[in-house]
Length: 120
Image (cartoon, rainbow, N blue to C red):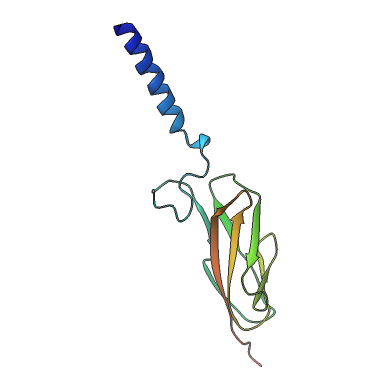
């Protein structure tokens, strides 16, 4: 009986150790996750100020290989974004550029782009 209990306890310990392996769940600790995980998924710079016609490169910083990623803007008349994160200022206003992991829409990060009138 004691030997059986030790064997069962050993298997339970191995199962728990495997469940805690971060490679088993690469989305643990993504941005916005209140569980306090250790992964990184953010965009730099988090805010950007441009004038029409200017461009700037946004950078995705991540410690997880959960790509591919999709870049998008919520205001195409203010700023456009390429699939490499290159932002082009179009017209005055504010836009939010979002990068999302294609396999999981809950994994995303944002940068707020403000486009101000240029000097005449």
